[in-house]
Picture 1: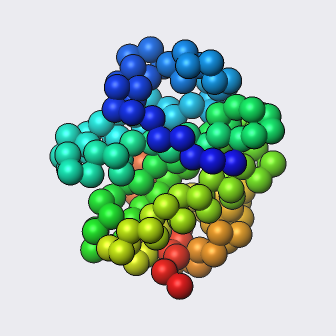
Picture 2 (picture 1 turned 135 degrees about the vertical axis):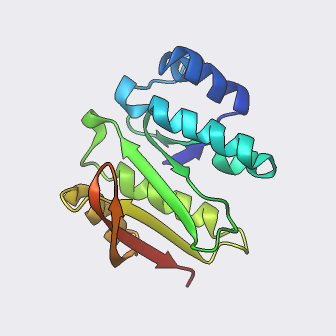
Length: 164
């Protein structure tokens, strides 16, 4: 597994044309394995708000060697120097779930984040009924860190990982 960081131009093309943009370069990518439109929009909003962190806010495509395909994606939701730590989000295409790709992708994102000295904590929010995502976070070393109300999803569980 490796992370592919698209260019800003590729991100804009994906926002314009959808998952077909990720396939244009000859990569295989199921529609639901590509970053969803809301992720593309929020990435562009973060880049506009924090242009010095443009590369940081580009989505990370989870590229699997077997099958040779984009199987999901993740993104950093806060700046690397955010007081609460770096928030991550991720998703895996439906036919690729249950094969360890989320765990591998999240672990790669953790490694990338901790290469920056300013990143001392990483956190993720998850719905209490999303047991597969909770398992991924625990496998990657995250620990429960309370609950946070969300206007759309109700109570979310917060998981946190500190630099070792």
